[in-house]
Length: 165
Image (cartoon, rainbow, N blue to C red; front, side, top):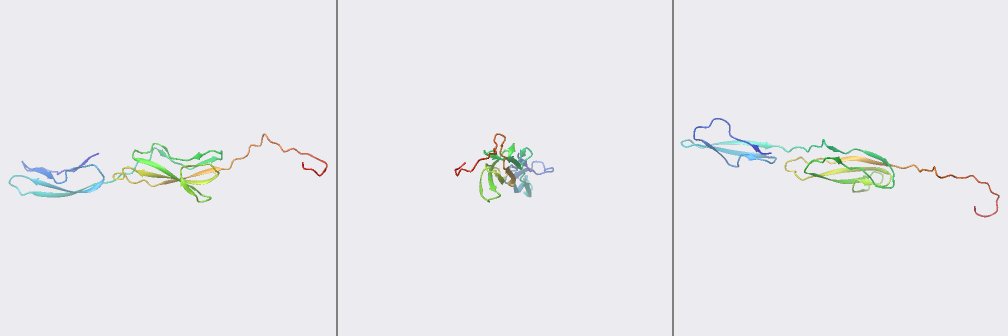
C-alpha cells in the first residue's frame, strides 16, 4: 500500500509544490522529505518533513504449533507447524534430542524420548515485516507396552537327565 505525504493548507494562486524525492512511498523506512513552494513573484519556500513507515509483524492467528506426545510406533512421529503460514514466510526445522543433546534438521523422530523442535522462519519481505522469532515446542515419544495377549509362558516339570531343555 502506498503512503502519501503532501503539503497542506491554502497555496497562493498560481503556486505549485515540487517534491524533491516524490511524495508517495511504499516500503517501511524513514523518509526525510523536502517540498518547495514555487510561485511567480514570490521567494521559493522550502518545507521539510519526515515520513516514518514502520515494519509490521506477520499475522500468526491461523498458525498452530503445539507440544505433541505420542506412543512409540516404530515409524516416524512428527510435530510441525500447521495451518496457514503468512505469505512471505517459509519455515525450516531443527530437532534436538534432549537425552543425548544431538541436533539435526527436521521435525520428526522414530525412537522414544523427549525432543525439542524449533520452527525457524525465513522472512522474504524483511524490508516491510519484522523477522518472526523462532518457536520451540516439544515432541515426546513414550515407550510402548508390548502386547502379550497372544503369548504365554507355560509351567513345566521335568526330571533331571543332564540334557538341555
